[in-house]
Image (cartoon, rainbow, N blue to C red):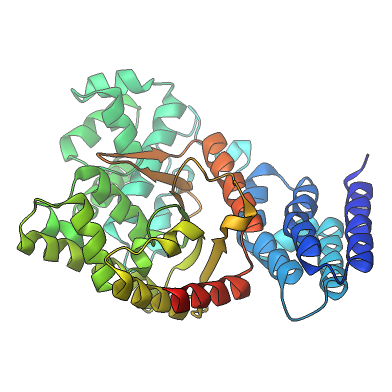
Length: 414
């Protein structure tokens, strides 16, 4: 059965349900909540996998969710406009992809190979020249990506590369992910191993490594920051889009000072007051991502438990809830709440964050924080699985407008 026919059946069923159940708004809303995912997954089948993830997550899904979950019109009207939008995708998926100015996937002859190792035009070295005031984190990630391309093109396994620089496979993985600073000696040894002999290429890579070694703003907190969280700060600081799901606490980018202090005390109850205050200052400094000249796009979904748990006491929590309402009004912020009445959901296993970057060479990263460490996932199947879960959570949650009203109501009840 073609994707067109499947979409016709889905939309016809939704129209019928809305037409006969317009008075039963809750039941109709439940049907509409799942329809965006069904329609867009059908539309996305017409795209290449590399295009599918970007367009689906960043453009189509938010738009269609807003259309179908909006509160300004009757369900039949919302579904009518949603159907028009969805069929526009089905009919012109590739044209939409081009119109959104997304990068085309690299062809086989553009990827590094044993014949073109060492040629600057095949290494993406000029990417650095297109960055305005390149961040050290971005440079490390770009350099790591180039090293991975070189290693794979030369047919060198990670274990062999690690042995060459007197390190382990995990060290090579961290280097290729841009999570560690590069030593000139290690970089020279790896370039020699990979057969990179062009002096111009070697000089550019070494220059990138030197520039990427500049200290980050959070270096002043190095005595209280674990290494695994420093990595996250670096990724967060250069991301373009942050999608997050929270089960327990308000996300750090939305926390008030008093709420942040209460959360910090829960994990560091034995720390001296001076250290607690430094940790709070660090958390608040991160929030410049919301208020700076180039704010990040943040799409946060949270369980109702986050709103009901009075961290720091009722007064602190009431202020925090009002702050969430204000944050939800920002044009680059989307907040959604999954209420208890929706029952179980796909995010029951815990909180996680998906980070996306503007540079096409940098893959999406999934971040899962634990008590004494964190997990970073970059493999495409892992990332796609978490993006799928995030999509379902967004569909299960209240619409952004309804979520804002819900938070306001909880604040009044607190």
